[in-house]
Length: 345
Ligand SMILES: [Zn+2]
Ligand SMILES: [Zn+2]
View 1 (tube, rainbow, N blue to C red):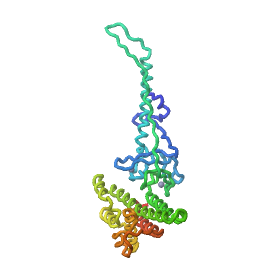
View 2: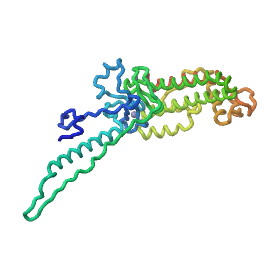
View 3: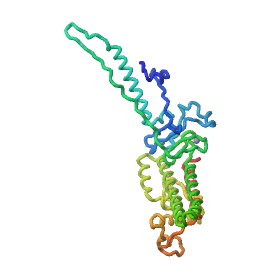
View 4: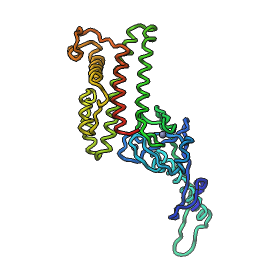
């Protein structure tokens, strides 16, 4: 069959004798193409990646169009051709349908266009063919993704939603890279707080430090939750995994909560690398965060008991840069250890 417009994409025939076409996907303004994980159970699925292979990976990859990609979110390994997005497939389908319509219209036009109506005999048959409008080609645009990443192992460039566990090209674990980047952001906030304080007053600096401490604890909770979900989904059926995951609720807002979940369900001791004083200090940081988040930053009895020193109830909790940096260091130890246990780097 002659596919007219599609002809330009024809590459020959498959072994089974089917017509084969090769369509280049459009790069977005950042030079990336969209990809979608083929694993039905993958939660996020969509990411974008560069079509430029880093020099070091050239030999490893061979035919890029048939390369096995790794889903950055769930780690599924599959042929590049199975990572097309729904939108891309719809676009290709619409081009095929338009091509087929056009071909049929031309064929019918040629066959019936000027044929005289048959006359005489018992009855006459009249076939008229009118050219209809062709179905239009569906357009698509890639989604905007905020997190652009350069893999620190193979320097491949890609973009994702939030955080990911793997580089799609080399497949190596890269969640630590995201975590480190988040920690760096908090460190900048802490180092800038002094300058902001001089410029806008101590209150603003204190508020900045309070936010930074809340962010540190937020990273602990967020990354551990993410890691737990990833590992549980790898280990259990979808149904069982969801049941376990639902039980997390606010449990990772407490050190003992996170400890129990990881110990019981994954046999990981998340605090393995913390000394007793470090753990106690982190415990206190969690209590501080509670005061900041739930009590307008005013000391309550619960906090005073935890701090084990006399502080006036309802007085303002003061956060020093060192409070944030110490908590940050402990969270770095705990989360890095746990992430590496789940996905060896
Ligand atoms: Zn996936
Ligand atoms: Zn990589």
